[in-house]
Length: 181
Image 1 (cartoon, rainbow, N blue to C red):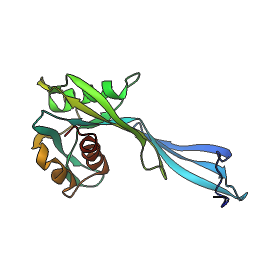
Image 2: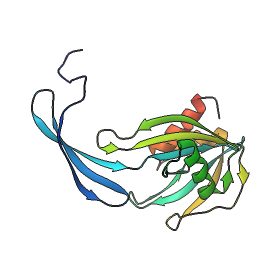
Image 3: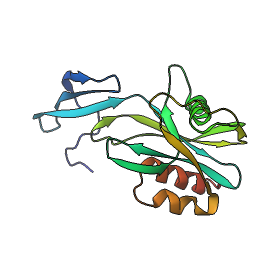
Image 4: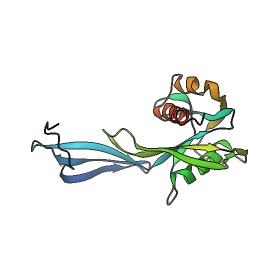
């Protein structure tokens, strides 16, 4: 298909950071488009994150927490930011332990992906954790959540019940597609 959309990288004439919040950075790239015109493409950049599908064999471990940005409480999969030099699987094990009080025996990578590529620079991975052993929960000062195990046969319905988010639905569907749940 040759419709002028360009197969290669577009030339970035300028890249401007307009604000930094400590949580994300926002700005724009001034880009030359394939037809020769220029346009500002705005973006928000966030640290890489991991979403954890954690199975006891009979249940998936969900957490329930209030999301101030959208003013709703969600039942969702545990998730968190990947810290310096951590792999996605290492971050998944750490976040699962901290948020839910479960230490996994094994963690495997299901999928790496870019999120909301029209406006964000944010990479996310979904990992699968199994062989869960109870340990002490270590919530951060800004984490207010409750652990809610859900029977595996009810997990997809629970993930899809509104309000929901894409990471929870994607995680459950990927684990099901891989035959893990």
